Image (cartoon, rainbow, N blue to C red; front, side, top):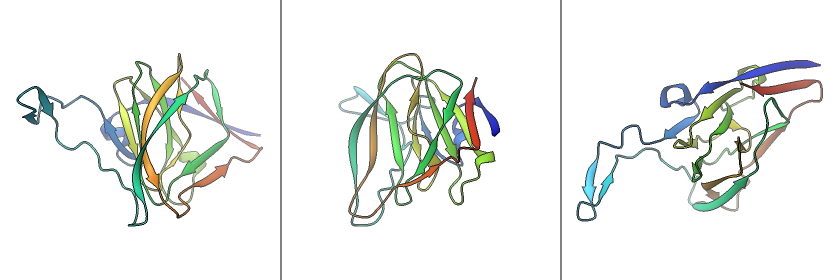
Length: 167
């Protein structure tokens, strides 16, 4: 069996740029005041891609149970028509596992540790694992595509391949 350890990396806009966008409060100080001066609206942080005119962006909720590290990955998925945004609404760190769009290269799978105040918008066609959280159950508001076309590809890891997410 081939075993590959994937060490957690710090999530940042620069480290995640090939996979999508990081949405956090790092630059919240810039923007414009709205709502009679009670709200600071930051500049656009990310664009939700919902595919062609047959699809639309929908808001859903996910509730994810915690994992323990090391964690063995069993499958990766991608959404060829749209992005998928995960907005963490609990005070809990979580893990984002990704690989570049196109043919899946298992030796290029990366894992990022997200702070509780960070959210991500995973780009169109980017391979990723389902939600992984640490410590306690974590809820996510998810903005994703709904439409009649198939927007889900899944890759099941062969039994002789093992990808372990480690600290």
